[in-house]
Length: 155
Image (cartoon, rainbow, N blue to C red; front, side, top):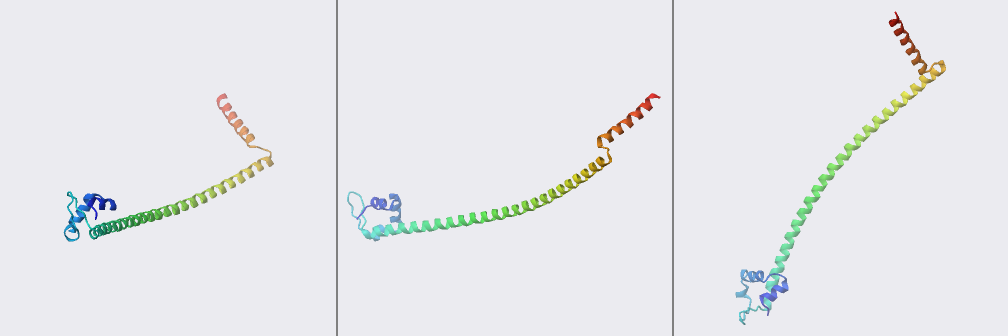
């Protein structure tokens, strides 16, 4: 035979919780041999088994409830992460399209630059072949201006 305190200690719960369980389930009246020894009640093995079974049922029920809550939270997190993944995949697709556009524009600019360089090289070759360079052309243009100014202000 054990006391409420001994049963509570075995279960790892508060003594008041065991007492309330006993009262709620009327274990005192139906399944106990209460011996009054200095005001302490003792419960037989049948009552102890009922109490322990009740607490194990509560624990199992509480664990099952907690498991359902955990599953709901996990499902919500998984759903949220899947939505975020879809958004990220769409962003990656858009960035790849932009990158393709930029690459095409860069290629066109390189081709234009290359064509301009070829054209400029051709112009330089013509000047070299004709014997007149760009510096010579600038000098002759400058001299023509100077002559015009001299005529204007001389006269």
